[in-house]
Amino acid sequence: MTLAAGVHFETYDHDQALIQTRPQWYWLIAFMIFLFTIPLFGGGKVLGFMNVVWITVIAVVGLQINVGYAGQINLGQSAFMGVGAYAAGALTFHFNLPIWITISGAGVSAALFGAVFGVAAVRVKGFYLALTTIAAQYVFSFAMLKLPKEWFGETEGLRLDPVSLLGFEFNTDVRMYYLFAIIGVLMIYGAWGLVRSRTGRAFVATRDNDNAADIIGIDVFYYKALAFFIGAFYAGVAGALWAYYVRYVMADMFTLWLSVWYLGMLIVGGMGSILGAIIGTVVIRLIQEFITYFGPWVTEFEIFSGVGGGVIFASMNMLLGGVIILFVIFEPRGLVHRWNIIKESYRIWPFPH
Image (cartoon, rainbow, N blue to C red; front, side):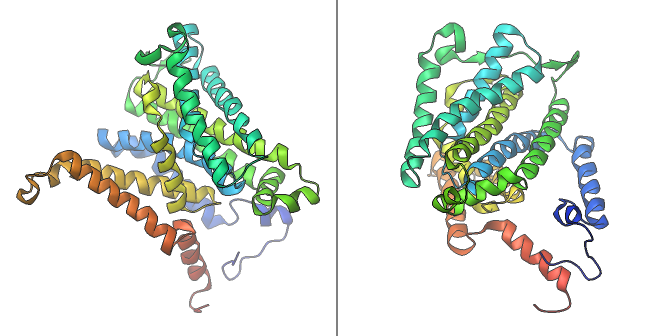
């Protein structure tokens, strides 16, 4: 990594630190203040959008650990998220447990379900692993609809009351925002620490060449299963937050297409980067919000008067899919790669290279 003129490190710990310079600390503190003051100036639409973004970021960061760092193709993240949502919903609905227990239980339940497919990753990879994780989607849907109605409600799902913590009830968008923001920041920080640790380096070695990793002493079986376990844990936590946000859990909420969109967010943001997962999530969610907002407005034009609203929305979603395809072709390393180029250019300015 190129450093600005006059910046140098005197210790290994300083060189490996996540935040390395004083200006970076200033920017981080300013950004955190901005995030936690959004409810003061943001309206209902902004808060609703940000709440969904926080939930999605947690799920996509987990997918990044699984796919971007460990190299295990996963098209079942939505199913793992659904397991977490149902686990949190059932623990709340039937036992009225505290939120910190239900969210942890949701993460562990999804992680155990995901670890099953991590074991399969030892024997298969690539396209065949993708097909295996797709099976998770159908296993999840079938189980939730066929298990006893007293457990998960079958086709009726589970309806939840607003959750509370130490007597404080999360019954407004503002209160939910702060809950999601705090959990989201902790999960992102944990992911950054993980990928910079010994475990993260083992994930990368397994991703680059699992045979070579095995030769140098890395337990490939353990780390492939662990990657699925951790990625599914993140999805389970995201699913629990989604259940508390909409206060309703149903299997139809967690579809295969949702998993595909999550993978698309990684492609747009950049594989193998926690920041890339965050950027990709925000960009795709902004485009989806744009489509939702302007879709009805487009149908009012006379030229589209004979075209159904469903066709307009389908066309605009195809446009979003086209954006992802363009990134695969022209910017396969995602927006985070472009951001790194901008940072490098700033640090070596006024020299061209």
